[in-house]
Picture 1: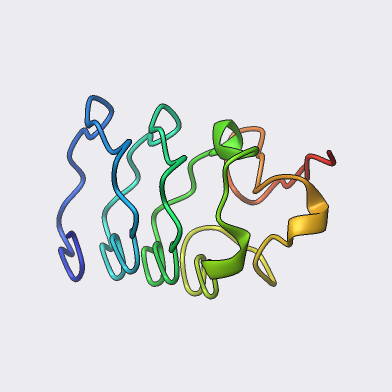
Picture 2: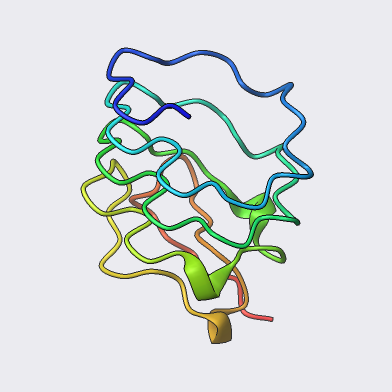
Length: 111
């Protein structure tokens, strides 16, 4: 949707994404994007592959997604993004990234 939208940084907090099943590459290479998506209901999403790949400004805390993150299809979700993770969260970690003020401070939620 915002793939290669290099200047986009709009407010998406009010979006209803509850029925979306794929967010694959949604913000890939959206260089300026750093919007708060923590209120999104991503419970129907099954694919977040490369969702933030190349979005080098994005560093938001998505702790609210902890119990509904699609672990099986999230490869390269943060590759070359503003989130400094070495790998994708794994199912046995109980949740995705939780950061204090940015993705550089990681606190994994264990179920």
